[in-house]
Image (cartoon, rainbow, N blue to C red; front, side):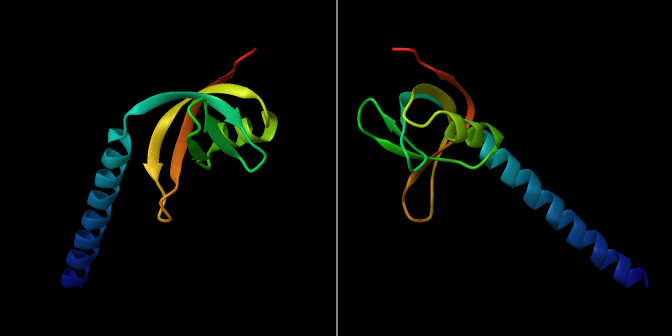
Length: 98
């Protein structure tokens, strides 16, 4: 019984450590600010013609649900998807009136 509790404790400690490192790695991604237009397939096309997928979160969902074909300024962290696509996880945005 004591041995089983020890293994459970070790597994819990390893899991907790993995979560801490994952959270730290995610928080290390610097935030950037980009301007561009949201296209019909939920991508940000910047003023320079670069294309970013919009990461799935509440702010990103609001952006693509309500602002297709509008010029926006977004802030967020950029990452690379497994297929090589650039993804911005949006933390805030504003619509830019032209």
